[in-house]
Image 1 (cartoon, one colour):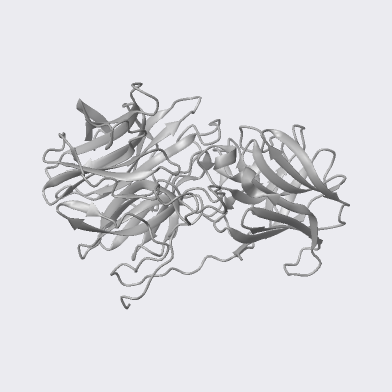
Image 2: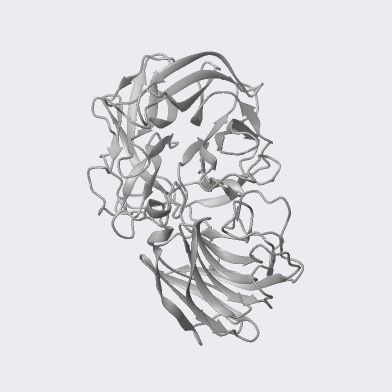
Length: 519
């Protein structure tokens, strides 16, 4: 690989925020936040830091955590992934995270696994306040946990606390130390902390400024793990806050560091790609940027480039994921998620082989529940998504495609008893944007997005292809699907959907295939 070779950022496009990374030998592993989506906490594997494949989810059993009734953008916040091998012992992976706004319980927890692909343990609850916990294994055999909590001193003021972690008991122990409360005067949302020991010193990496346009990466260091920590005089070490809302990458922050086998350093972090102004329907994505060291401090060049030089590692691409899912496997592909942890299995891949069957249930996307919706992340500003639906709707029953930001902001293209409908839900109010007569037999439904605009279309039949499509209504303004309008921390998900809109039903909807491709 020549020095001129470059890669394209983000390395994980679509809603993959709060990345945390660790290396074991020549292998890199990474996990991101998933909030209310299930399975949660996807685990990725790479050998060159550029090409990643998903190998599983740390949360893949509904009984691992009470995710069932969390609100939009509640749930699983800011995981940290670490590997530790004690002298003479077997290595183990630790994933620490926070469950937020669950009616049953909320707080920090840790999962463990001998293989990052799983299975992962049940959740071991930890005490400690706030969010964004992180683990650090020191070279003296001790382990430590950091976390973030609000202080109440002024709006948005937080502090970073430190306590010892017992890996055998999976518990926090000992005295608490407050080690940081911001790199600048009147700092807000100093969070996302990670500890490292590099060259005999302890380094603290934090996010600051809130997870929007003012997001930034800050660094501090100390001679003892408990501090005192002194901030880098050139903080922030990376931010795009000075580049304006029109920059192609905004909101960079919440970073984690990793060293390659040859001693090079890299940083993974979140950022956003607006489709116009500050509107970001893709959510916060995972970016990669190089790090050097000067005068004992990490240096990034101050910004994330869209096409940096590739790491000095042997390239290791993985087989491409098919653009069209034929629903012919025993389980849903890892790309698919549902809302919250379902109490029952309302989908099937074997009742009608070669089809995804969704039960038509009372729950809808407007409910804080687990409706019959199977979604995947929108990963490109310009994309097309199509499916083939076989469905005989009764009164009030819908099935089709949905574009989902949250329960109060989404767009659906559905087959209903009176025909095909394009429906927008904005601030909790539903509006039928366009309608067309019913199609006899199977019907194909699709969305094509160009920046902020989503065009719906439909066609008779079930064969994939470009023929016979009819646009339905005017393009929908996707601004309502951005977190800047709808609120929250996630990006758009798209996929098959079915509902009886509050009524009981024994019906089902069958989807023969689903295709997603960039344009």
